[in-house]
Image (cartoon, rainbow, N blue to C red):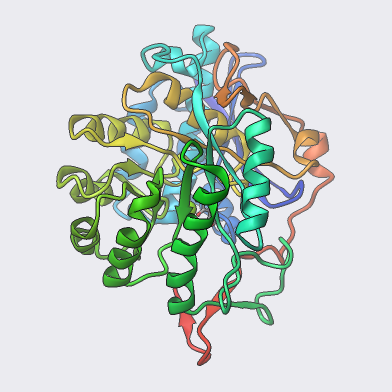
Length: 396
Ligand code: KDG
Ligand code: MG
C-alpha cells in the first residue's frame, strides 16, 4: 500500500483548524489528522504543504513508527511547536488509516480498552466565584464530576472579550499580587458553597515565578484541588522542585511541551502528578503512548490537553489513548462552536461524567470538505497578549 496524496486544509468553523488528509492507493482509504497550532496555523500548514507532504508520497502508510522517526530524526531540524504539530497531523492520519485497514478502533490497536470511558472535566469559568459556583452546579447536573475554575480578578482578566481580536490593538492586563490573593479566596468560596465533593482544577497558565507558584500551591492546599495546572513557565523545568517542596497540592504541567524529553525531569523526579501534553503538539499518538509509558513507571498520570483550539480529531485521539493506557488521570473536555458540527463528524461524546468514542475503525472521525470550504481562514484569530500595569509584557 502507498500514500498517493497529502492534502492540507485550513478551515475556520468558529475558529481556525489545520487538517491533514492522507490518501492511499486503496480506493476510498484515507486518514484524517489535526495539525492546529493556535495563532500560528499557517506556519504549520506551510511546513506540511511545502516540506513534509512531498516526503510522504509513495511511502507505506502502515509504517507509522518508521515515518515518525524519518520525519523527526531523519531530517536534522527537529522539535518545536510548528514541526511537532505538523508531525502530529501526519501521525494521527496514519493511525486513522491503520485502524481502518484493521477494522478496529485506535484504542484497540493500542492494546484494547482498560476502562469504559475517560473521566472528563469541564471548564466552569466565571467572572467571579459566584458565577463559577453556578456553572459548576449546572455542570454537575449534566453529569460532570471534575471542573476547572478560572475567574477575572482585579487587574487580571481571565477572558478575552471575544474569540476574534486584533493583536495590534488588543492586550489583557495581568498583575500577580491581586491574582495570588484572589485564587485562594476563590477556592475558599467554592468549598463553602459547594462542599468537598466537586473536584476542582485551576490553571495558572505559566504566569508565576517559582516562588509565587510555591506560595499559591501552599495557599490552596487545604481546599484540595484536583490539580494546579502549569504553575510556572515552561523553560526551566528544575524550578518545579521549589514548587513541589512548597506543598502537597497535586501539580500538572506540559501543554507547551513538544516531546518526551521535556517531560522527562518532571516525571523521573516525580515533580508533577499529571502530564498535560497536547497530542496535537507532541507529534501525535506515537509520542503520547511513549510519554504515558515513561510516566506510568513513576506513578505519574496523563491528563492530555483538550482545549477547543485543537480540532475534534485530536479530541478523539485523546480519548483513544485515554481508553488504552493504565495511567490515565483525567481528560479536559471542550465545548465547541456550533459550526464545528457542520464540518466534523464522530467527535467524542459525553456520558455521565465520561468521554467516550465509538468502536468505529480508526479514530472514528471524518471531515465534510464541502462544509469546511464554507469557513475560510480567519487571520484575526489570535491569543491576546498580557501586559503588566507598567506596560511590560507578561508571560501568557
Ligand atoms: O491556545 C492556548 C489554549 O490552548 C490554552 O490557553 C488552553 O491552557 C489551556 C487549557 O488548559 O485548556
Ligand atoms: Mg492549560
